[in-house]
Image 1 (spheres, rainbow, N blue to C red):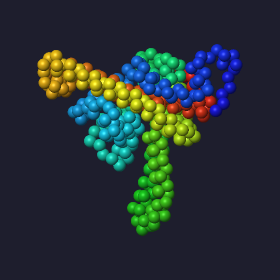
Image 2 (cartoon, rainbow, N blue to C red):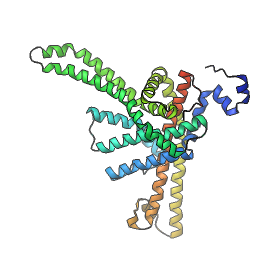
Image 3 (tube, one colour):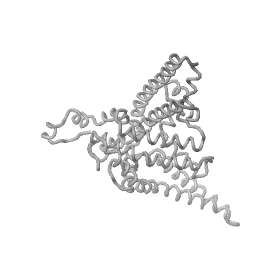
Image 4 (tube, helix red, strand yellow):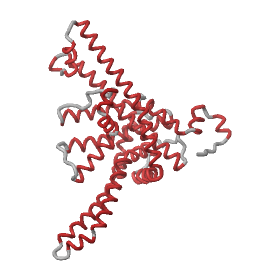
Length: 350
């Protein structure tokens, strides 16, 4: 890919700008660091804490009380992968329940989680987009207001594929119902069986595209400060023309970030174990009694603070998973934007 720059501009550019111009894919290596920057990680921490509250209010327990250490990742790799791709996973579950293919005992929780992924994704992506393009993220309060203002645009962008799915499914259902017409109905339904298959196939293609590509809508709004229609058209165009490079780049970038995540989790696990051992030795208490403090509440006394601090630490690590995901999406979007529309990597609409 050739890029032409003015000689005077190239003379004044920094080393980082030079390498980003010559090898634009190198900016993907910045994703783990950007995901861990203070403002971005703060947004991920808040979203993770909200998800934990949803778990406690609905399930009575939290699924975020275990660190993604190497042993646990290798033990349950599929579960870990689905948790990393939580925005896509939850959108798939939401569509499955909405279409009647699946049933959930917690419809409110599912809807609330999807809502937080939408709003939190805008919040995190806005901060990450500033870091990836300009080297500095906007203030947290501005990013929060931005996500609230752009949320209706995101819902509008999602409405296009959802309406397409509903229209295709409605047409297919109408053709199936022809069989209920007396006398000639079964013959009409049999003749129209082919169109039913075709309409259902197209609906499934749109649904798969929505599950895979809806995060690009968030990245578009966060980076371009555009409207819902522009976000939908850009995302569709990039997926249509660059689907394979997008998936490969996303996979490699996430693998790099997950290696950093597992390392952090291992260090956190060792830290918790060492502090428990230190308490047991210095306080002359059994190790199992110290370990039980991790589940203590304030009704059990001051040990509730130990559980609180451990929970906050867990939320930070699980928040890093969210920031890693959304930073990867923004980085992939910026890369696809450069490849398709030749828009520079450092362009960011305030």
